[in-house]
Image 1 (cartoon, rainbow, N blue to C red):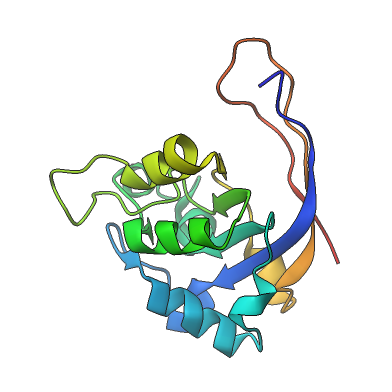
Image 2: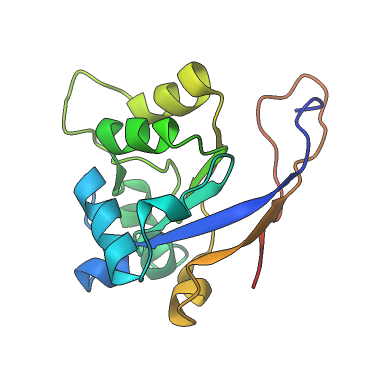
Length: 169
C-alpha cells in the first residue's frame, strides 16, 4: 500500500437498489444489463464511465443489515458477477466499490468459483476494490456523478488499507 497514490477521479454510482426497488438478496448477481439499466434510469450513458473513474454500486445490503442483523449480513451478499466486472474493466475503471463486504455476489452462482471478481479486478486488471462503502446518502440525493477522492494509508508491505472515500458534488 505504500506505493498506492491517492485517487482523485470521476465517481459513478450505479443505484441497483433504486432500480429494483428493494435490497438485493444474498447471492444475487448484478449483471451488465442491470448496470446499463441503472445508467438509463439515472439519465446517463456508457460514455459517462470514463477511463480511470471509480464505479460504485449500491445493493442496500450494508445500509439494511449492518449492525442490525449481522448474522444475515455475514451470511453472503449480492454483488456484481464476472461479466459485469469484465465490462467495467474494459471501460478502464480504476476503482470498484460497493456497500457490502466483498463487492461481488456470495455465494457465487458457479459453485466452482471463489471470489472471481476480485481476480478480474485486482489480479488481471489492477483495479482497486473498496468494500462496505456507504452509498445511501448519494442515492437519496440523486447524486450519480461526482468527484471521487480516496487516500489509503501507506502501510509498508500491506495489501489493503482503511481509508475514507469522499464524494464531492
